[in-house]
Structure formats: structure tokens, C-alpha cells
Length: 195
Image (tube, rainbow, N blue to C red; front, top):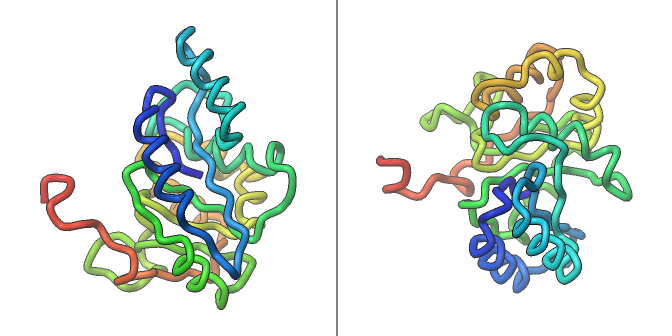
């Protein structure tokens, strides 16, 4: 699930090109673009055409935001809207580039339950049990997605830095015993975010 905004048409088309030329022999990977309710007439028309053409969009029942519940709404909605269970669900930003085959290979040897996988913050850390995974992209096993849907812990704490909140929910719920940081295979490209 690539969290983006409805008006980011060019970015979606670019990412479709990038992910459209990748495949994995070991995993079925579905790439979906995720945003909140449509608010403009032109969005409703253009997004409808995208859905007809690509069938790769999930529209959540929320107001567009970054740190006011969109990630919670994404994870908590998936069990009710996806046609089947997945081993893993990923949340990724729309400015992230993923190499799907290496991602699938790295997950192929990991547990299929109670898994939290990504790029641990703070950046110098290699210990995934100390903090949380960066919001640029992290993976949860399906059972954790279902837990988020049912959890009062998550439902009552949805405002704030979304990546930090997910880590906090998992810690408070005594979840994600299988935590993996994929450094150095996952990284922030130097020079971004003013650094």
C-alpha cells in the first residue's frame, strides 16, 4: 500500500511504470495506491478512470492527512476490504522506490506471524526492539493488521507521527516479537530531508 494523495496523478503514473517492470518469481505482490475520500469533482472523474484502467486504488473513509489517523485507517480497513488474506502488508510512502524481488527474498525466510519489518529509527540503530520502523516503508504480518483492526490501543491513539505510533501500539500490545531491521538494504538516500 503506497500512501499518497488523490491529486498526485503524475507520481502514481511514474510508480506504475517502476513497479510494472518488476516481478517476483517467489511471491505474488499487489501494489495499491491508498488515499482518503475524494473531495473535488475532477478527482472523482479522474480517479474513476484510473480505477477502471488499473484497478490499483484503495480509497479510505477519512479526510486526507499524514499524522491524523490515515495509517491507522489503512491498516484497520484492510481485513474488511481486501479479497483475501496476505502473508504481509506493507505501508510505503509515495517517494520510496522498492525493489520487489529483493524485498520478497528477504521476507521469504521470515516468520509469517507477529512480524514487524523495516528500517529502524533512529538511523544509527540496528536494534529493531528499541524504537520503531521508519514510515518510509514497513511491513506487518497479517495477524498484526487484524490486531490493529480490533485493538483499543491503536484506536484510541491515532494522532501523531504515524510511524512512531505503530511502534508504540505494538509495544503497548506486547506484539511483534519478530522484529527485523533491513539495514543496510533499506536506506534514506543521502541529501533528502535537508540532510
